[in-house]
Length: 122
Image 1 (cartoon, rainbow, N blue to C red):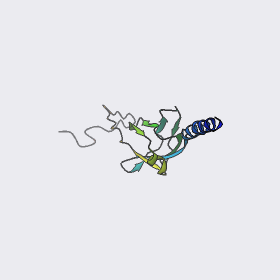
Image 2 (cartoon, rainbow, N blue to C red):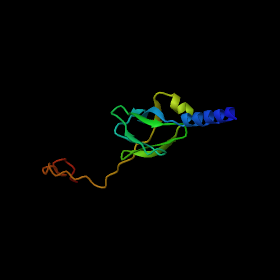
Image 3 (tube, helix red, strand yellow):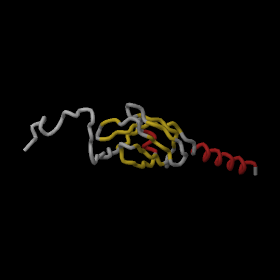
């Protein structure tokens, strides 16, 4: 009877230890360039961090967690962590830059610039 209880306790302990989050090191890149100031959130735990100027970040995570990468300058992406993801240091996440199209650009400081000064008059 005591052996069964001991085996049960060991099993419960091993399951609990296997579920611990560890420090996960990653890097965010877009078009082979590092991307700084991008938020990375662990959807499962709610933890959030921001990449440094070199695109690197550290967040607590475990296998199966979903990390969301988002910022105004990149398209939001989700990545599900695997055992391989946790083993790769740093694990590189590739995102795409967002196109930022303006309807109009008004420059007020240079009032002397017009079509005649640029020789654009027809």
